[in-house]
Image: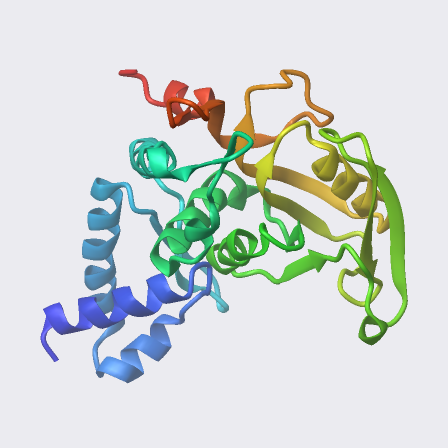
Length: 275
């Protein structure tokens, strides 16, 4: 098999299974090629990904070692993807009565979801989360693709518990925007105690739901290693949570002029020196 063929096949396997460690022995048997030859192939892939800011190809030493793909996007690639999402969100036809914006198509497009999953994974993978946690329903697609990019399980917190879930822990929390008391439940079997979790949500206004998830994780004795939100509103300025990362800031929705003002979060722009 020619080198170009090997590189194409190896790249496909690596990208389709992020964070999975592939053994060089397996590659060697698959392609009937020496490990030294495969190391040269991987060097080409590593350099290409590095130059394009598409992620990292990591070599892991030791008997159980091998090679894996880590979707750690370069800051310029991260900004490019966020700006592309902002352009979509700023489309006038997204404005709905009451000053809301239409977001359903973002969770309906597999390509966009895959890119969003890598966006979330990039700043959090080094914190070594063991589970991605979200609350139903709109945040599930984004959280699922984040879990895929990190190669870890997804845990979904329910609004209403189900009989098929077995013993559950149910708690009340106060919605930050409506000030109403809401309920969330999680099966005891879904999340082992003392796990490291990454909380993911699609939209945040005041942060009540995120605060509730943090409190629920405390009941499970889990360590929250990160909190990520795709879109946060500029108002209210004071949120009910701290130490979170949002990727897009929604400043205003003008229903009369059909204008949506969105921009990448400041921390993303500040991570690129030339900006």
